Length: 535
Image 1 (cartoon, rainbow, N blue to C red):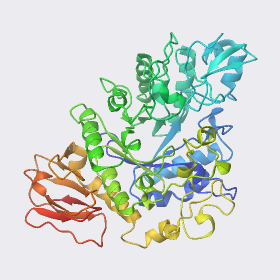
Image 2 (image 1 turned 90 degrees about the vertical axis):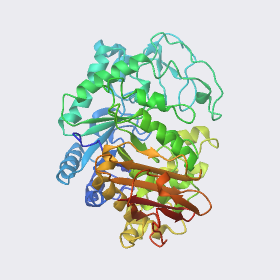
Image 3 (image 1 turned 135 degrees about the vertical axis):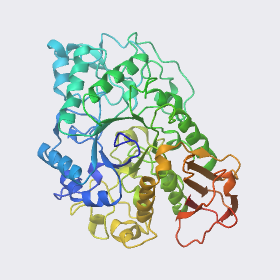
């Protein structure tokens, strides 16, 4: 492997909710710095920080008013530089969330564009009248009238988030310089927000209508003209060239998709010649039930699209700041969540762990009167917002779970067993979710067949069982994962999991208290139990 990210585990931090150092109820950079040793202890390769730039916070930082400033609620640029320095000393990479489809309407670029001031005139998309039926993702028309300029501007999200005009060369140059600013600071890569939306149709044709998965009007359009155009691929290739001016830096793309996922669409953003994004999220399993059959279908297809033969690196994710945590999507079933941890980590490529996922933290929504997320405010009760998955990190059993000495910006999730789901408690429990994640990450790093071969999924095991293996044909070394996600005990013949492989033994169990051993090349797996086997 030549690049740090090729077999990495990346830990996503939502800074507002991770650790508060100054007692204002909001997590900050100093708080993250204070927990770097904990992050290092997980065995992860790096961190991804959700936006920390200066922002009016209409969309909690995804509306940036100055790319080159840290918002005061998180700290200062000196704090950020210190974070990067200390992380690097610990061997941790740092990725930033970079929002390049749009800015805040308070950004100087937009203020100047409203005034038609010089090169900024066309930094945003302006029209004399609404040219089409495009919708804003957060509701209403994507076109808003501005009295100062006397024209309509495009906003794919809130009206306070005007879309940048990537068709304007001066705008692209400015965007690329903001990226270089952080690359020069030593940042190791970027997670690119909704990057497949940057190249809009220059003819501004209306999207065709379609039946949506939800009652949201935005989902009732087929978004063929406001995202996924050929121009987007060209602009991403240009951005990749900027990244390639520096050594060992990564672009990880969030690809906005419709329905239950569009794997081919997502994979296309790596480029036909692997000259676009090095990594892409694939969200199919975020949008459908986490059943063995679904996982097998999605994961095997993702390996086909991101195969070693194609020179691509698959990226795996189950939870993030926009969707309910995976454990909550399986009805807070701890046994299933532990098996999902095995699936998430024991993969070739990049595994992204959302903060608190390693503890079994759960999502829990808020009453309508307490919602802060603009999506929940707009679409209640069809979408109850994303606040539930953004609740504070559960550090210990002290006030506010050790997150802050002040009232947190969001109330912690006081489940009946919350004291058992803290770092403090799980550190002392060898069978905790935390220590399971550590063991899985260690094994991912130790077993070269995981990083060097594509997984092969078994289609002959019972339908409620997920089974796959990585086998080095030369050495015969093999790692296999068998997860009984059904409601009954299953007997598994390991020849159906890893054909031609001998000597597989249990290395990691999803539950230590459950007895499990290989006998005569087979195993009996209780319902809700999984194993990782090696030879």
